[in-house]
Length: 295
Image (tube, helix red, strand yellow):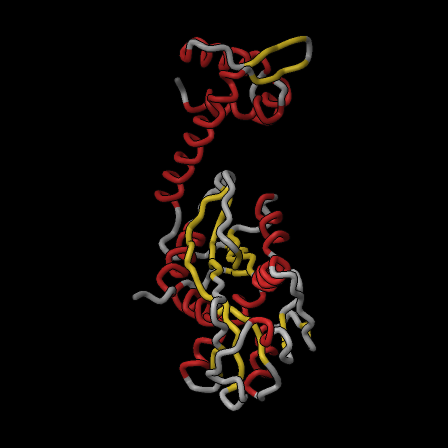
């Protein structure tokens, strides 16, 4: 079995045409036919059905595409490892949500740029659903998002770290370090993220299960702006703990305890299982994992 036969097979499978595969690869159609026939003989299986001008994969052909794809990817990785310069200099496109972009990314990307100054990084922000759709269309290399645990057979998950979502206010607010019921809490002057934020949605779903609803006095998608309002004692918000951890440690903000109510959300990094993982991606994934607090 020759590697070029595997490449030819994948081209025929994708283009569903011997003639178009031959044209793309620079072979004659007869050469493509001979390569596929030889491959089928070695595998002892028919890979394509040829009915008229229609070319379709058989069941055995579909199974072989999975293995052939991995072989081609492994060969590309081997060639890259031998030919790429030592310094990273490619491109990296990352999708993330606004709260992560505002709080985690400044330090993370500062360190990434220090280590790999020649890599060009672009950031796209949006809701998890929008970003994951873009990743599935290969418009993003990596998605770093916040939501309940999510899985998909099309993804590889590189990071999954839990974090609490808490009610938080200024240290000067009468509610600082207080303990109040959830019913009382939702009557406070609340500043919340927009409805498509995953943790806002989880809160509303929980309230709906209790036949309660929430009416914030302000909705805004900018987490940094919400934190500034909280510092000025302008109300109470519901935010992932990591977004306000430094302010809590510095004593500017304080959690508000709601007995019987806890909510956990997960920081997650995923990429498509068929994505060629570049060295730029590998470096970012490693640095993101190392930046997570331990202990």
